Image (tube, rainbow, N blue to C red; front, side, top):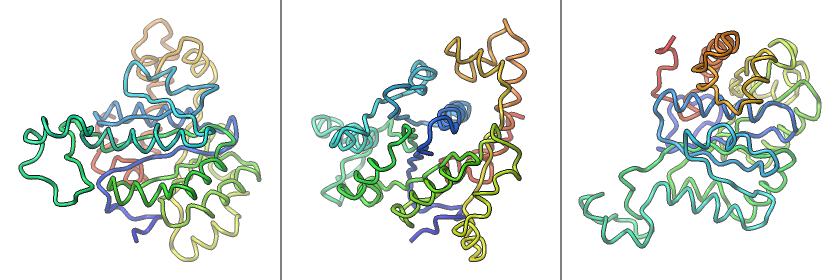
Amino acid sequence: MTDNTNNPTPTKSRRLVIVTGDKGGVGKSTFSRAMIQTYLDNNQNFAAFDADMSNPQIKRFYEAECTVMPLDIFRRGEADISLLDELKDFIYLAEEDKSKSLNNVIDSPPKDEDKQPVRPDAKSLFLLELPPQSIQFFRSFEEEMGFFKMVGKKLDMRVTMATVINRTKDSVNQFIHLRDFCGDKVDYVVVKNLFFGDKDRFERYDNCPLVKELKNLNKPIPEIYLPDLIAHAYDYLDENNLSFSKGIEQSKKLSVQGRVEKWMENFKKSIEPAKHLLGLADVNLQSES
């Protein structure tokens, strides 16, 4: 089993990053948008899933710039089709296209009868943002479907749970609940949102018995930081439905341009220690600085 804490070379060839936190307002959407912008800036071939049906920010900000698929995690059975089957179709040829495209994709038929030939434009990186109060539904999905085992065995894919936290006890407890049912079937990244305070102000998480135990075992959970974007720049992007790149490209508000450009630079520096768990193992995030 791959070590889920600090293994720099995951054994799976594909990666699904699931952004969660299960509390509204912790910064999941901001982190997801920043990750998508980082993927775009580094020419990653990826697709995104937006499961927040009431406030689909990924769709609102990035639908015109990348592939964004809707996902209703609250409807039983919906994730089977809208997530698992879509993941397969982004990687392998659809059954009806298999015969006519086989010769153009592989030199010989696959040995495993369950495997279809890989698409010539196959995606190997995916991001899913879960909405607030959805982790129990995702837990049921995993228990009924065996989702993590399925994507690992059938899609050669490893999952990272990127959990955005604030300073509250509830936020920490929800992360403990998440790890309780995911176990070592996934990798973890904890995202400390600096909107809620400086790096040393997350005492409830830092002093959590689970976190201390893992550190004592020399298996700490990777931690990264979500920089705080000043309110006037964040609000301007929100009011005008601008992605981070569009906020940098626009020239009407130079103050916004400067703030967002530096913020994205700081964000990429922050995720560097955990980039192998976020689908960016071979990417030099500092090359643009």
